[in-house]
Length: 211
Length: 101
Image (cartoon, rainbow over all chains, first blue to last red):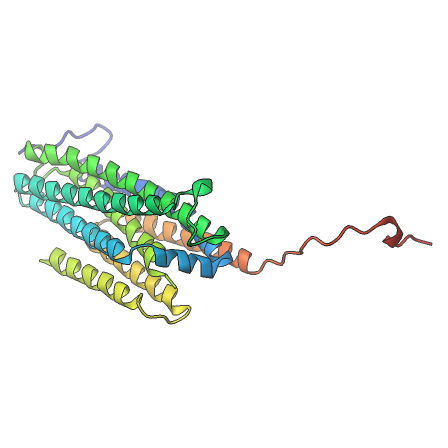
């Protein structure tokens, strides 16, 4: 067990931790506003093409989307548990829980890729490459372009989150974190929860609000 | 422990949205789905992200972001809904243009 290095500008470790947390929350706020831009586009085009969007949403597989929701919610649970375990001094158990979270992340990406493959097989591509005969017109094209954009950028964030979790997982496994100092683990966990929250909004917009 | 209870609540709410999406209630489809999404986000933020135990300034970041998101989305949708666009009409010929006398 060791305390992390106290940087000279902080009076004590608690203040350093508070600063780290605020910094992370500010970053999460900026990430949320990044996705807000995309959600704003979705809201705007849904207002213009309500029926087309509802019809296009029916074409997505609700069951796969719901499975992905359950997967991410569970991975958030295991990440929260891992922070809890580190606080109890059980760093190796925390590392194992992080491994479970990362594996769930892989499953999420796998499901996403099968969905994309199914869409590509039908000719549903983003932007001008769209050539699905079943749903024509501007509305479905816009919906699916937004679908690929939003889920694609979200998948990139999931991948980045998995990288961060892997980083802190190795740290936890090597006992670099203790009940006194586990800030990197907490901050990585916060990022993963944000990725989950974004999916919590993506899921109804792209899967549930169907015709 | 409480993480497990929160997880159960989250799964329950997700199941609820899924089941509700099968039926149709007009505008309430969207309202209900988003209300549940906000509830789930609140649970994740307060308990998984431990916002309830952090200093209030962190909650300020969340509240300000939420406020800005609400502002952007509401104004954007209001703009589009209240637009009046005028379709391009035929171009008048020389003879049809009234000239001042």
